Amino acid sequence: MKAAAVVAAAIVVMLVVVGQGPEVAAVTCNPSELSPCAAALTSNTPPTKVCCGKLKEQQPCFCQYLKNPNLQKFISSPNAKKVASSCGVAVPKC
Image (cartoon, rainbow, N blue to C red):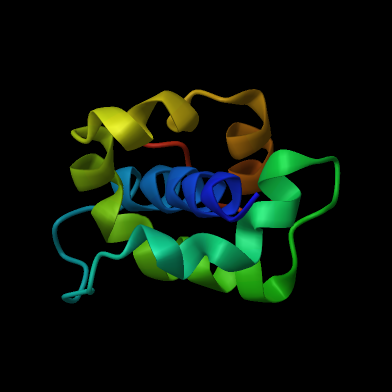
């Protein structure tokens, strides 16, 4: 279950990061920072404010996460897109 939560969090991070431009301040890219989004990504639970904050914080990392074969498959998940949309984070295209 922890692995699913980390993966789900990584998806959200990727979505946020890809939508952000290069003018964003340096961020430490760490998919595990998205763990507060695990419940929202794996169920129909709405994202928390903490989750949305982490998505926005990790948004500059999404393109990097998309290059990782272990993470990229989660970006296209319907729940990841729903969570990103709920948080006002654009789904990136790299």
